[in-house]
Image (cartoon, rainbow, N blue to C red; front, side, top):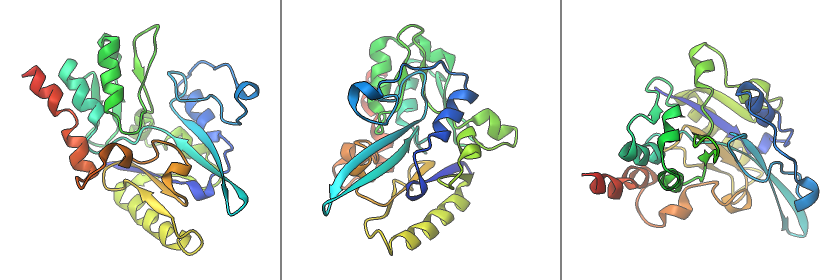
Amino acid sequence: MPKSFLIDTSRCTACRGCQIACKEWHELPANQTTQYKWGSHQNPQDLNPNNYKLVRFSEHLEDGVVRWNFFPDQCRHCDVPPCKEVGDVYLEEAIVQDEKTGAVVFTDKTAKFSAEEAEQVRDACPYNIPRRNEQSGLMSKCTMCNERIHAGMLPACVKVCPTGTMNFGEREDMLKLAEQRLAKLKKQWPKAMLADPEDVNVIYLLTDDPANYHEFAVAEAKIGGPMSKKQFLATLARPFKAMKA
């Protein structure tokens, strides 16, 4: 059974320890900060080839009170990853999925994708995650710290989280923990929900409407019908496969 994250946003203080730990573990270069330019504590402004994880800041008025929502954004490691489905059309095994952990990993072969093909891979993701390095051509995103997991360690972001926001373990255990936390939080936050728990291995526990966190917090925006999310993810690449055939 694959591994899963549970990201409990009710406990997130936006310390950004997870974001920094991810950056340090993968030895990613620094980015120019832009807080003074665009008026948000969120830095950088978006995911990029040098940031596989980003704590998003969102604020809105609710009954006359400003409410802050923090969202540690990262790849969801979908059970049926549409990025891999599309990537395999252009170059098999450029994107791989570890059967043991469920981690979806972009390899160095992604540099062989053309800019247009890379954009198709990104467009296939209902969470708008993959990013392309314009200089090297490499596509990148969260790796689930797959090498750490195989070495018996926790993902770097989970290891440093001081509040219990980031949790990781066997999928069955994370789903059980998610349901327990959800039942507790619904008493205070009636809108509390789990984001796409049946289809992804990074499960978010939200206490507010998904749109109040991030445009791509859930996959609903790209589904828009009675089709289940898993069915949607599984069928995304069919036009590409047909074209290849």
